[in-house]
Length: 346
Image (cartoon, rainbow, N blue to C red; front, side):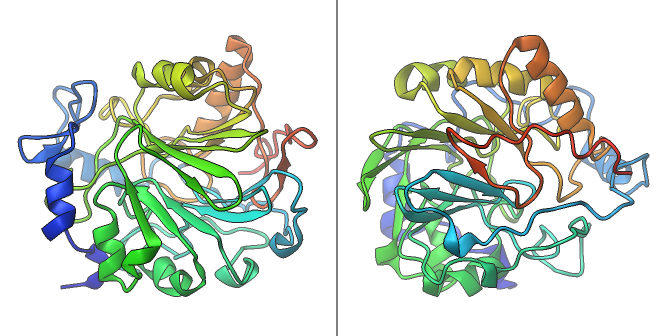
């Protein structure tokens, strides 16, 4: 079997999973009852629609970007650099943190199947990162968040992996030393090196890399220091969990929230753009950054529709939003890019 499919949890890891209050009837469950598809939707029709051309679903132009020297970011500042979709680098308390790194050409188990990543003016590779990465956070095990080829190249340089309960099974199968892996159930926390506390929080989604779903957990994560709180949302449909996270773990200095790959056919597992602005308000965050767009076409909407609708909703809701180009640093307290750089891109 293709190793990129990963490996389902077993042994001690599976025993821990079975003790989780979020694991019932043989699979992980969302806090809110969640139907994967809307009434009347079907997978065959979705596949036909997905592989049809559509209008504006992928950019014609090369996307502009900024080539930031990731190896020389100021250690005393909190910087975030986005690479498209849900991959971003964070400099926090002098530590190098990478979230959901996907640097393959396709978000797919096979690099000859699936839509290619959008062309970027100055693309990033794993060679652009510091030689040592202190932490890699993996929110869940979908291919657009957990990439076999990226992990294979990256893991010898990584001191620690933090991920959702069960996802460590994939990592171990791919050669990551078990001692490097910490897995979290919702609301579990630990203190990392450098005075950084990490907490896993709920999200409304699902998991699975082959046929059997929901055998590993999906999460959002909170990073907290003495001075900064960051919410990394992963993938999630909208529900009351955002308000609960805001009450228990907020307020936040910045929230990284998915705004793309939505459709009325699957309204419960990804947010509509207007719901993203509401989630930001629920979280009680000073500013939010829309992610999960700008790299892969995984839904039926035009490629720039997510950011256009999300920023319009943020203005109506009175929520501050930052919209960096790929590679353009966001520096908390100093630089919050707001240029609508996508407007003239075809």
